[in-house]
Image (cartoon, rainbow, N blue to C red; front, side):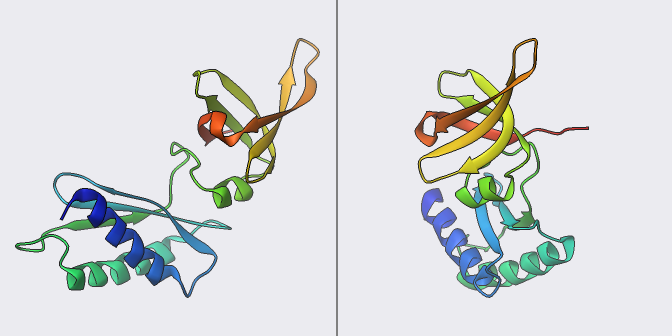
Length: 155
């Protein structure tokens, strides 16, 4: 089975597993050549470690039954929440990070930093601090201009 088909099957199994928990959602599925599966799950209010452990056990059993890695069904599974080094991929992730500082990298590799104020289907709105007087400026960025967005770690 082609890798994209396997990823799609794993995403489907994970989405089905999360159906009773509407506050959690699949962000990404990755497979290394060694059949090491990484599933990233996020939640509207984060994901407790106990939930990640339960999701790992549940999905592992489902994957064993699905036999996606013939002939010997050999694979490993890691279920985690996306770390701060992972870019925001889904609308729900933007929503949960409203009010936080983000770095938005545009397709031309320029970057804008500011507080995420809003997200719509078409654009994000951030509040930048610009100039020597540190003036606040609201900036709209259309989603199709964005290469990736990461949450900034603020101490």
